[in-house]
Length: 253
Image (cartoon, rainbow, N blue to C red; front, side, top):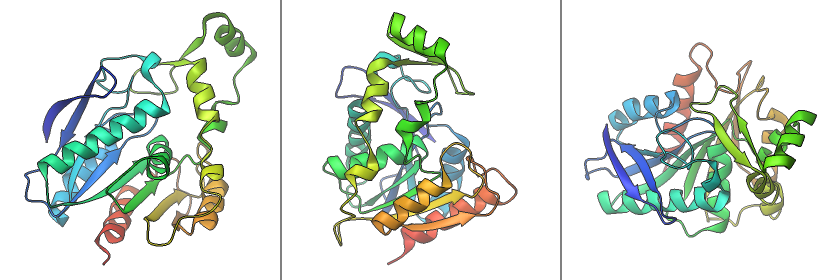
């Protein structure tokens, strides 16, 4: 793995790691989940396995995540999409001739869907693991104490097993509510614009399997469900199956 830091579009640095040599014909931009980082188990597995299958990987930290030098005041969907755009630009610099694809996990899948809908992009294929297509709803269950704290100081500090505690502002919660992927994709996907593959566990208690099914039906995305799979798809053989499914999706002609 090679580490580097990109100068972001919003005045802060973006820590990245990649496997690129410049000769790759395909590069997967790996977009991590909420509270995770560019060095998540999934990103590490893809970085170890994909190069052997002819696919390079490029991962980066969202604002306030991993080794990002900023806190949650910089965490917004616009900034997350800006950082994904910066990662894509860097991949194009390093691998001028490579096809770009996207691998998004949970919140990273949600962000990738927003990016594909709202920004110029080169990639035409995205594989989504445990996609949080109802991401705004995941923060609608605040306790009365959390609501009071948010009203008093304008932010909450949350740690639900995250890599580092996250400062989540009232503006961030409102930002999520303003980005409903079902509303954005209600007209489906324009034929020939891009393809979406999805994998989801039937026992995911974070990102609803039912919502994943509804989104796949809405958009025509290819959805594979893994029986008894949890949100992390961490059961025996499940990570390897995710890698195989993603590779098959990306390698398809």
